[in-house]
Length: 135
Ligand SMILES: [Zn+2]
Ligand SMILES: [Zn+2]
Image (tube, rainbow, N blue to C red; front, side, top):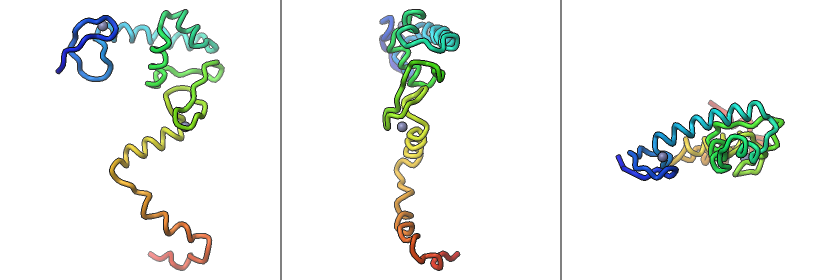
């Protein structure tokens, strides 16, 4: 266990990974999050700056919640997020569903490359390859 200074209030605390924020500030942030979540639900068309002003949170904090997929914007929301990989429009998080699936696959297949040996056979499938398909 490490002792670090809280990034928010500067107090020393036992750091256990994740954000460098002390438990007291984490709890405060959690309360704030509930407030913002409630606000977003009631004000579906609020922009990020409106949320910041009305809830007294930083833009940065909102972005973080979004990236953690905790804060989800509605279809009516003017808040536009785009996938960090392909630029598709998304409602929360960092990637669209497609890229999320792809990154998840890449992560679970780390170290192995399962698609490599299969691709050669597939190329010829347009021609008369049916008979080579034996068990
Ligand atoms: Zn703190
Ligand atoms: Zn994408």
